[in-house]
Structures are given as structure tokens and as C-alpha cells.
Amino acid sequence: MPVASGDEVLRYAQDDRKAPMLRLPYHNRYAYSAITERKDYSWPDGKRLAVYLGLNIEHFAFGAGDGHLLTVAGTPPDPRTFAWRDYGNRVGVWRCLELFDELNLPAAHLINTTVFDYAPQIVAALKARGDEFIGHGRTNAERHGQMWEADEKRFLEEVRDAIEKASGKRPRGWMAPWMSSSHHTPDLLKETGFDFLMDWPADDQPLWLKTRSGPMMSVPYPIEINDSPQILVRHHTPEQFRDFIIGQFEELLRQSAKQPLVCGIALHTMIVGQPYRLRMLREALQHIVKHPQKDKVWFTRPSAIYDHCPRPSRRTRRDRDRGSDTRSGARS
Image 1 (tube, one colour):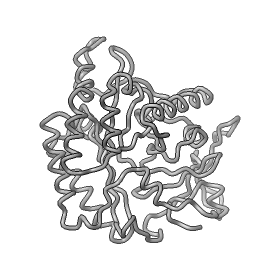
Image 2 (cartoon, one colour):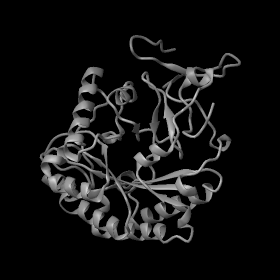
Image 3 (cartoon, helix red, strand yellow):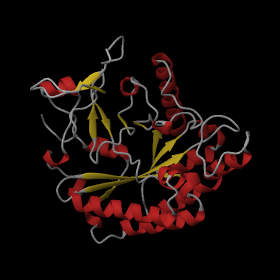
């Protein structure tokens, strides 16, 4: 059995009433909560389903580091792959923004800070739309999950300060490149001034995580309704991805009659920004905005979801031992 030592705290999933047969390492961030047992509440104006667009805007190193692959990697420096990724900044992002404008949809942008110097026109366009900047590291050519704690703190502060300087506002949300995380990331995010993270796809409702400085919200971010794994990894077609978005929306809308839910749609500029994929994304989003029950849908951004949810109140002893409350509107 692993033994906790130093700053790392390993917790074990266990039944409080009897000794468990098997003790598993546990993250100690949240307690278990069945979605069918939670109290009902609503989004603003009685809406039932919160829908947001999360557009990833990323910049990569030439011939080095990590990056999305459309096909097999070429021999470094592999200009073909770099150029395909860079299409997202030169063309794809602009086509996506045109589509969002056409449908009058707000968006949140998970943006690398190296984009600010490389393509400042993108920053200006996002600010003009009044969209939200989500912390997304410096570049998707790197992952920060293996950094030592002090280095990771400096990294998060650097990203925070760069976004505030470029956008004029302190970033409130975080979603790491490749969803990379260390044991300390939620603690450090809380301590560096972030309000919520989007790296824990464990629920269809906001989830409060325990940190050493107090609770921090996890806003649902999809790993399934996400063009990168669906198209690049699983090789689904644009038509299939369109159907996935529509199917997710329809089923969540149906389920939201019982409780408020979040429907995130994760996109990447170099993927859905390609014309034949953009056409299918347009069809999916048109289906949503023209839906006969659109009066039940809240088109929003992650920070508005955070602002609407009440802060956690007093928790039970088990919650204190195991983690924070699972649903933002819950009382314990």
C-alpha cells in the first residue's frame, strides 16, 4: 500500500462504516455524489441547460515539442504538420468567429499566451466580441504536469499576468494544454487567483474541488464532445461529429427537465476551422439555436456559470475528509 509522505497527500476511497477490502489511492479533491440524489435549481431566467463553446486557440514550436497530428508525423522539422496547425491561427479561428457572429453565440477561448505576440489581431477580435479568455498555458508544445511545485506556480503566474496584460482582465478559468496536471495544480490555481478549472471531466454539473486554500469550482469541459479526440484520434467524420453534438445536446436537454446541466462543446481552430468540417459545425449549431425548446437553453460562458452558482456552505465531516461538495447548488 502506498504511504503518504512530504507534501503529497494520498487518500483512499473507503466505506466509513467498515474496513474496506481494497484501499485505492484517492485524490482527496471531492466526495462522491450521485447525480440522481441532488437538489434541483435553475440557471438564470429559469433556463435548464447551459451551453457554451470552448474554442482552443493554440500556437506551436516549429520542429520541437508536442502538438496535434492529423496524420503520421514527418521527419523533423516537419513543416507540413506545423503549417497544418498554423492554419488554425491564419484561417480557422477567423472562420469560427464568423460563424459565432452569424449565430450570435458567445464563446470562451482557451488560448496559449504565445498567440498574443504571434497573432495580436486574434486578441483584438476576441476583445471586440466581449469573449472570455481561459488560461491555456504558454503553448501546446509543452506540458506542465511534471514541473516542481515552485516552478509550476511561477508558470501559472506568468500565464495569468500575460492574459491580464493582453485582454485587460484577470483570467478566471484554467484548462491546461493536454489537460496536464500535477498533484498540486488545483491548489496552485486557487492560490494564484483563478476561480475555476476545466480539467476534470467528471460531471454534467459544476463540481467543487477541495484545495488547501478553500474550494475551487470545476466547470464541466467535454473530452467526448471535442473535435480533437473524436476526429484526430478516433477518426470520426465531420458528419459524425455534427451528429455527436446534436445527440449530446438533445439528450442533455431532455435530462435537464429534472436538474440543470452543462453542455460544453470543445473545438480547435485547425480542426473545425477546415471548410468541410466548419460546414458540419454550422449545421450542429444551427440545430441548437433554432431548437423549438431554445427558451430552456442558456447560451453562456464558463465564468457566468461560476458566477451563478452559490459558494459551498458548511460540509459534513465526511466531505471534509474526502473532498468538497459535488454540486455547486447543494447544501450539506
